[in-house]
Amino acid sequence: MRLFIKKLLTLEAFLGAIFTAPAIADSSQDDFQRISVVPIVGYTEETEYQFGALTILFFKPSFEGGNVPELDLSFYGTTKRQLTGTISPKFFLLNDRISGDVDLHYEDWIGSYFGAKNDPDINKFRKFDRRSFYLQTITETNFGTLQWLPNFKYGIFFEVNHTNIDFSNYVGEMELPKNTNGWRNGVGYHMSLDARDNTNWARHGYLVQWGHYFYNKAFGDYTYTHQELDIRGYSEFIWNTSMAVGFLWQRIDGDAPFDKLAGSDGLKRFRGVETNYFYGNQALFLQVEFRKKLFWRLAGDIFFEGGKTGDYFSDLMRNKWHRSLGFGGRFALNKTENLYARCEFSWVDFKNLGVTMYVRDAF
Image 1 (cartoon, rainbow, N blue to C red):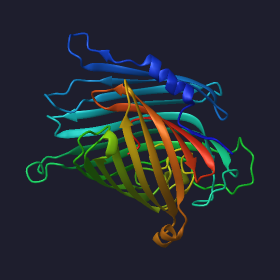
Image 2 (image 1 turned 180 degrees about the vertical axis):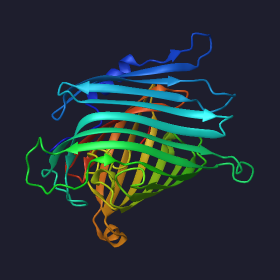
Image 3 (image 1 turned 45 degrees about the horizontal axis):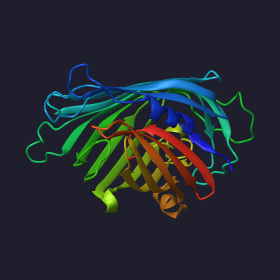
Image 4 (image 1 turned 180 degrees about the horizontal axis):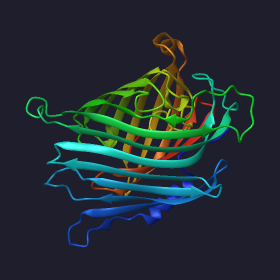
């Protein structure tokens, strides 16, 4: 049974976070938390030892009750000379009338290509070296809509992405994808209807998002479009437990490289597998999760996920579901903002074990 380990590490790193990331308050006498630090220490067969840190800086909101801007800084490397780093601001401007997320990311890493679309064999894959740099941002506003639809926001999507994928350092007989390297630059629009009571750990409300992004050879090396419908609902359940339900549909049209097709991401949508373990021109995901705060800074969750892909809508409906059942532990990096780091174990297709570690909820 192959162990899937996605995006960091082992349980050791999570335990390190518990003992070394206490709340650090402002130097004044208020209780506003300014910073959280999570160590990254772990081991996998693909990377050997991993070392680094995640730091999250919190900034006071511009008005009483406003959203808290954040700056995430994550850097770590491995004894196999792999390196990754991310700078990710989350900002709110003009009394929260304008908001946005930015991801500035670089990695020199090892990936796996399974090549069988919705029916991969866990033991048949081809490794590759990936060097990738991208800047991705979504900026939204409610100007012109606040009076008649206060939860509605609209905005723009922007991505600059250069990726180089090299299969030559690893042997194998699998047929390899074509046109993997180059610029993937795109722009698009994004709309959301957000009635959640909290953007980190919601206990009430709903979120509906629609994105339509356009990539063109006029400003890159590929021409394709990405469409995405994301629907989430939140409510309280028994024993002070919160329940989250998620639906995600993705569609890709055009000559997108294989790593930009619709499919599992291993962190938020179908946890515990490698990125694009199953993939296609369309993807569908269903998720249910129960979350409960326990004591001190600890919490837990259990979840069920289903996902499938297909080249066409008829394929998508006909293809079999991948299923995953799992549970996890959480540690509060900022109790006031309900911001948690999580470590989760998945039973993928009821055959293989997966491990996921990440900051913030999956959906």
